[in-house]
Image (tube, rainbow, N blue to C red):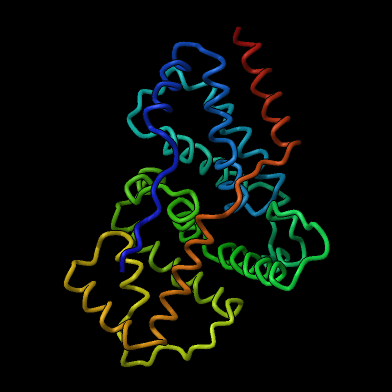
Length: 280
């Protein structure tokens, strides 16, 4: 069980230097920070609100708030944690008030553009199969209750650590991990049919391998329990297949695209330019 938890992205030293420069009024540094973070904030808004128009508003308002507040940001948390906290507050407002908020998560299957993936036309069987799994993953994440979806998105899609997720959500680390384990197993169960895993399900006498595997990723399983689980997996194809499918689902989460559509980028750039012009 050597899988490691997904690390946070970026070079902390380089980001700290940019942040110091932005606090000092360096506009180019601020624009660089915005460029570095806008894709992830947009993706977060898209997965949490499930509507491109709302996600556009979330990323724009979040980055405007960043531009306004960066000089007062003192680094009590990471910049990513601060931005996701702001974005989450806008997502909560948007889900409460937006007329665009979708009610039927099943519509994602019929509208691939709604999850930010363009349809390039005819594909090979392999490409179609991969796309089918991607759609199944999107539907599975969308079907989670908000409190489970935001934990999974922040941890397994965006790569924040469990303590960082706890800071964003105002929860204890233990509460984050509890929700995360449940969300992971729920998503894996929903995606499993699309994976076409022909291995029989684990028997009732098998241990909770998926729960142990998820806890292992968070450093909650000691070496002895890990070795015992390895021995069980070596002799149980069903449990080994279940763990492999969960491993694959989490890899797909981490590989989720984070491209911001060009019109959204232009809208954000205009809003930031207008803000900076008024404050010049």
